[in-house]
Length: 191
Ligand SMILES: [Zn+2]
Image (cartoon, rainbow, N blue to C red; front, side, top):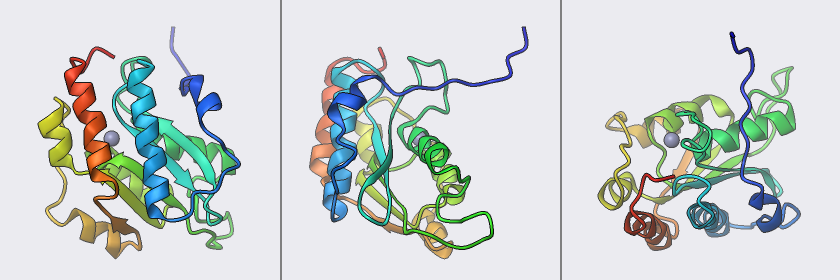
């Protein structure tokens, strides 16, 4: 049978653990939520050690994402791409910061527990975010787990900035590293 639709879901615990009405003012609070999601995801055994969230101009959550690759047999279901897709479905915009008539809205921010891999890096160009906030670095991911981040341009931050996307790194980096380490110690890659 030929499939003609894709169905991806976040684990049910997000409804319990994420307060969608709360504001997350400041960069650190936004990344703290992404890291908390990464931790809950491994503790709940609902995916890999990565979390992300899209925030609107009012510092409220538009959507969250966690890694769902193994539970959903989908290599695209990374935390960042899940958050982008769910934010786009919620706003009904393929570019979060652009209305149908081209009017710019926002700013929209993606906070992620770890530096985007090459897939999520690519997705970030077209998602319609204005800011990218990052916890752990890719070298943290690769040294503490067996995940491969894939190739990025040497000046990957500059390429984003050229297109108007500001990048802030090393927010709560130690906390983000701790979750990656915890995952590695649990044996990694079994969910
Ligand atoms: Zn990714």
